[in-house]
Image (tube, rainbow, N blue to C red; front, side, top):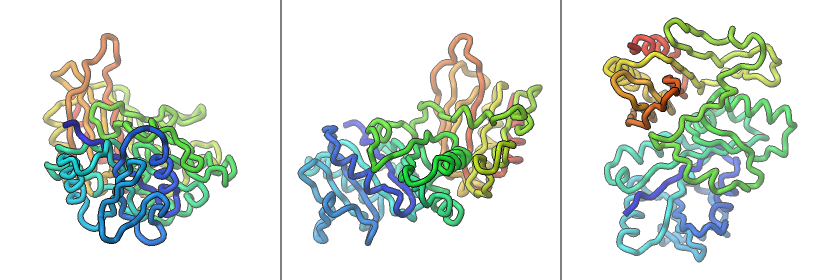
Length: 354
């Protein structure tokens, strides 16, 4: 039996998770979706979508949606769903986990890799994060949960964009890109989002494309080169994205966000053993602060790309496709985390090159 794709839907309180989920459940896509939600009280999914039954943990609705409130550990809940599916007691094609608005998505994502049964049954597809345009600035300033939700995202949807001026929305998009350059950002008007922008994103697939906004790597203006630390002789370039680029405070990032991103590129190949030793040490020391990291690597001794990614202390790698004739062999890596040790990462990656 094929693996069950799972999507984690997160976002701060009032960001529109329920609205988006309602859209996903009512769309005529023919898919049967199991919804696991750990929201309680005022944040519960609309009762006209999920009819809560205090006697039953799982409710199957007429539209094919299976609703499960987390009343115990997530691992156990996922296992129960899978077992009922195997026995023919429940029929569903995918799982959507809606987290509480105050949740850190990290432990939820780790569940899919730390338990063998869950890892063999489910395929974590992506973390989708909603950001409330009207209240995002204050939430990102004051609440680390909101910043972590952005840092973990594979795709970001901005809700309530129609409630803010264009320049304010533009500033928010710019800030989000600095926090997480690998997550595409789009607006979502009352949850009206194409399904292919939410499902089957392959955000956690090692062979998926490493998406980094090209504009993020190229600061605007003639002085762009002054804002990156490049050593072309040694094939290494670490871009600094934590300060303004001379085009006005209103547009450019000037917040002291603890969640930041660090992008690194090199045309020189890595020594596999040196890189493994360095990354292993990094995740042991800074793992709790590393939200997401991913890369396409040019490695000595192979004609194939090496794809790696991780969440906190969990890191994995795999051989990707063969480098094409004439294709520039370049390592591209992005680290997203809290108070990242930029200097240590830069120095360690440089020393791991051949």
